[in-house]
Length: 198
Image (tube, rainbow, N blue to C red):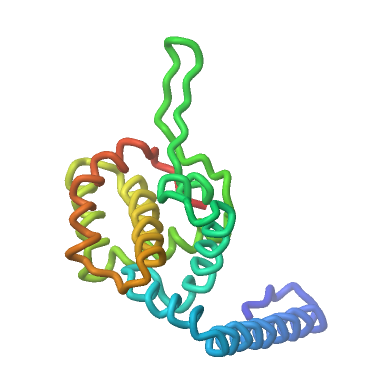
Protein backbone atom coordinates (compact mmCIF):
# COMPACT_ATOMS: atom_id res chain seq x y z
CA UNK A 1 0.00 0.00 0.00
CA UNK A 2 1.10 3.56 -0.63
CA UNK A 3 1.09 5.03 2.83
CA UNK A 4 1.14 8.72 3.48
CA UNK A 5 4.52 9.60 5.04
CA UNK A 6 2.72 11.65 7.69
CA UNK A 7 0.80 8.62 8.97
CA UNK A 8 2.11 6.86 12.04
CA UNK A 9 3.52 3.39 11.39
CA UNK A 10 0.68 1.80 13.38
CA UNK A 11 -1.94 3.31 11.05
CA UNK A 12 -0.15 2.17 7.89
CA UNK A 13 0.37 -1.36 9.20
CA UNK A 14 -3.27 -1.58 10.33
CA UNK A 15 -4.46 -0.53 6.88
CA UNK A 16 -2.17 -3.11 5.28
CA UNK A 17 -3.54 -5.86 7.56
CA UNK A 18 -7.16 -4.90 6.84
CA UNK A 19 -6.53 -4.86 3.08
CA UNK A 20 -4.81 -8.24 3.25
CA UNK A 21 -7.72 -9.70 5.25
CA UNK A 22 -10.25 -8.28 2.78
CA UNK A 23 -8.27 -9.71 -0.15
CA UNK A 24 -8.21 -13.14 1.49
CA UNK A 25 -11.95 -12.99 2.20
CA UNK A 26 -12.63 -12.01 -1.40
CA UNK A 27 -10.61 -14.99 -2.66
CA UNK A 28 -12.58 -17.29 -0.32
CA UNK A 29 -15.91 -15.94 -1.58
CA UNK A 30 -14.82 -16.36 -5.21
CA UNK A 31 -13.83 -19.95 -4.39
CA UNK A 32 -17.23 -20.64 -2.83
CA UNK A 33 -18.98 -19.21 -5.90
CA UNK A 34 -16.86 -21.37 -8.21
CA UNK A 35 -17.58 -24.45 -6.08
CA UNK A 36 -21.31 -23.67 -6.14
CA UNK A 37 -21.26 -23.44 -9.93
CA UNK A 38 -19.38 -26.75 -10.18
CA UNK A 39 -21.86 -28.40 -7.79
CA UNK A 40 -24.83 -27.34 -9.93
CA UNK A 41 -24.32 -28.50 -13.53
CA UNK A 42 -27.20 -26.40 -14.92
CA UNK A 43 -25.74 -23.20 -13.48
CA UNK A 44 -22.26 -24.18 -14.63
CA UNK A 45 -23.52 -24.70 -18.18
CA UNK A 46 -25.41 -21.38 -18.10
CA UNK A 47 -22.23 -19.61 -16.99
CA UNK A 48 -20.20 -21.38 -19.67
CA UNK A 49 -22.65 -20.29 -22.38
CA UNK A 50 -22.73 -16.72 -21.08
CA UNK A 51 -18.94 -16.53 -21.25
CA UNK A 52 -19.21 -17.06 -25.01
CA UNK A 53 -20.76 -13.56 -25.29
CA UNK A 54 -18.17 -10.85 -26.06
CA UNK A 55 -17.56 -8.78 -22.93
CA UNK A 56 -18.61 -11.43 -20.42
CA UNK A 57 -15.77 -13.03 -18.52
CA UNK A 58 -14.81 -14.48 -15.18
CA UNK A 59 -15.30 -11.22 -13.27
CA UNK A 60 -18.86 -10.46 -14.37
CA UNK A 61 -20.43 -13.79 -15.33
CA UNK A 62 -21.73 -14.61 -11.84
CA UNK A 63 -23.42 -11.20 -11.49
CA UNK A 64 -25.02 -11.48 -14.92
CA UNK A 65 -26.11 -15.07 -14.25
CA UNK A 66 -27.85 -14.03 -11.02
CA UNK A 67 -29.46 -11.07 -12.80
CA UNK A 68 -30.81 -13.24 -15.62
CA UNK A 69 -32.19 -15.89 -13.25
CA UNK A 70 -33.78 -13.16 -11.14
CA UNK A 71 -35.35 -11.57 -14.24
CA UNK A 72 -36.63 -14.95 -15.42
CA UNK A 73 -38.28 -15.54 -12.04
CA UNK A 74 -39.72 -12.04 -11.66
CA UNK A 75 -41.31 -12.13 -15.11
CA UNK A 76 -42.48 -15.74 -14.89
CA UNK A 77 -40.31 -16.55 -17.96
CA UNK A 78 -42.12 -13.89 -20.02
CA UNK A 79 -39.57 -11.06 -19.75
CA UNK A 80 -38.27 -9.15 -22.74
CA UNK A 81 -34.84 -7.71 -23.40
CA UNK A 82 -36.30 -4.21 -23.37
CA UNK A 83 -37.84 -4.84 -19.95
CA UNK A 84 -34.55 -6.30 -18.72
CA UNK A 85 -32.68 -3.18 -19.83
CA UNK A 86 -35.22 -1.06 -17.92
CA UNK A 87 -34.94 -3.33 -14.87
CA UNK A 88 -31.18 -2.87 -14.72
CA UNK A 89 -31.33 0.87 -15.51
CA UNK A 90 -29.93 0.90 -19.05
CA UNK A 91 -33.13 2.24 -20.57
CA UNK A 92 -33.28 5.76 -22.02
CA UNK A 93 -35.12 8.38 -20.04
CA UNK A 94 -36.03 11.57 -21.85
CA UNK A 95 -36.10 14.91 -20.15
CA UNK A 96 -38.85 17.35 -21.04
CA UNK A 97 -40.04 20.40 -19.20
CA UNK A 98 -42.89 22.16 -20.87
CA UNK A 99 -42.73 22.66 -24.61
CA UNK A 100 -39.36 24.34 -24.97
CA UNK A 101 -36.93 22.64 -22.62
CA UNK A 102 -35.59 19.40 -24.03
CA UNK A 103 -32.34 17.76 -23.01
CA UNK A 104 -30.55 14.69 -24.25
CA UNK A 105 -31.89 11.41 -23.03
CA UNK A 106 -29.90 9.69 -20.31
CA UNK A 107 -30.10 6.20 -18.88
CA UNK A 108 -32.55 5.87 -16.01
CA UNK A 109 -30.06 4.24 -13.59
CA UNK A 110 -32.98 2.72 -11.71
CA UNK A 111 -31.58 -0.80 -11.35
CA UNK A 112 -28.72 -2.51 -9.56
CA UNK A 113 -25.70 -0.23 -9.84
CA UNK A 114 -23.19 -3.03 -9.22
CA UNK A 115 -24.49 -5.14 -12.11
CA UNK A 116 -24.78 -2.11 -14.38
CA UNK A 117 -21.18 -1.21 -13.58
CA UNK A 118 -20.04 -4.74 -14.44
CA UNK A 119 -21.95 -4.64 -17.72
CA UNK A 120 -20.31 -1.32 -18.55
CA UNK A 121 -16.84 -2.63 -17.67
CA UNK A 122 -17.55 -5.79 -19.69
CA UNK A 123 -18.50 -3.61 -22.64
CA UNK A 124 -15.35 -1.54 -22.16
CA UNK A 125 -13.23 -4.69 -22.33
CA UNK A 126 -15.35 -6.26 -25.05
CA UNK A 127 -14.91 -3.39 -27.50
CA UNK A 128 -11.15 -3.91 -27.38
CA UNK A 129 -11.34 -7.38 -28.91
CA UNK A 130 -12.00 -8.39 -32.49
CA UNK A 131 -15.68 -9.31 -32.10
CA UNK A 132 -19.23 -8.16 -32.96
CA UNK A 133 -19.36 -5.88 -29.89
CA UNK A 134 -16.39 -3.92 -31.20
CA UNK A 135 -18.03 -3.72 -34.63
CA UNK A 136 -21.21 -2.40 -33.02
CA UNK A 137 -19.24 0.17 -30.99
CA UNK A 138 -17.15 1.34 -33.94
CA UNK A 139 -20.25 1.71 -36.09
CA UNK A 140 -21.77 4.06 -33.52
CA UNK A 141 -18.58 6.09 -33.12
CA UNK A 142 -18.25 6.22 -36.92
CA UNK A 143 -21.71 7.79 -37.08
CA UNK A 144 -20.55 10.60 -34.83
CA UNK A 145 -21.82 9.34 -31.47
CA UNK A 146 -19.71 10.25 -28.44
CA UNK A 147 -17.61 7.35 -27.20
CA UNK A 148 -19.38 7.23 -23.84
CA UNK A 149 -22.77 7.01 -25.55
CA UNK A 150 -21.46 4.19 -27.71
CA UNK A 151 -20.11 2.37 -24.62
CA UNK A 152 -23.46 2.61 -22.83
CA UNK A 153 -25.17 1.29 -25.96
CA UNK A 154 -22.58 -1.53 -26.09
CA UNK A 155 -23.36 -2.39 -22.45
CA UNK A 156 -27.03 -2.64 -23.33
CA UNK A 157 -26.20 -4.76 -26.39
CA UNK A 158 -24.08 -7.04 -24.19
CA UNK A 159 -27.09 -7.45 -21.89
CA UNK A 160 -29.49 -8.25 -24.75
CA UNK A 161 -27.07 -10.80 -26.21
CA UNK A 162 -26.65 -12.39 -22.77
CA UNK A 163 -30.44 -12.62 -22.41
CA UNK A 164 -30.76 -14.24 -25.85
CA UNK A 165 -28.04 -16.80 -25.03
CA UNK A 166 -29.63 -17.49 -21.65
CA UNK A 167 -33.16 -17.90 -23.02
CA UNK A 168 -32.16 -20.06 -26.00
CA UNK A 169 -29.68 -22.14 -23.99
CA UNK A 170 -27.12 -21.92 -26.81
CA UNK A 171 -23.65 -20.49 -27.22
CA UNK A 172 -23.28 -16.99 -28.64
CA UNK A 173 -23.58 -17.16 -32.40
CA UNK A 174 -22.38 -13.97 -34.06
CA UNK A 175 -24.10 -14.87 -37.33
CA UNK A 176 -27.44 -15.22 -35.55
CA UNK A 177 -27.33 -12.48 -32.91
CA UNK A 178 -24.87 -9.88 -34.19
CA UNK A 179 -26.63 -8.98 -37.48
CA UNK A 180 -29.25 -7.31 -35.31
CA UNK A 181 -26.49 -4.98 -34.14
CA UNK A 182 -26.43 -3.30 -37.53
CA UNK A 183 -30.08 -2.30 -37.34
CA UNK A 184 -30.09 -1.61 -33.60
CA UNK A 185 -27.02 0.64 -33.63
CA UNK A 186 -28.87 3.77 -34.69
CA UNK A 187 -31.82 3.08 -32.37
CA UNK A 188 -29.64 2.42 -29.30
CA UNK A 189 -27.35 5.40 -29.82
CA UNK A 190 -30.16 7.93 -30.25
CA UNK A 191 -31.52 7.03 -26.85
CA UNK A 192 -28.40 7.63 -24.78
CA UNK A 193 -26.66 10.73 -23.60
CA UNK A 194 -23.01 11.00 -22.75
CA UNK A 195 -23.34 9.44 -19.30
CA UNK A 196 -21.48 6.55 -17.66
CA UNK A 197 -23.44 3.40 -16.94
CA UNK A 198 -22.80 3.45 -13.20
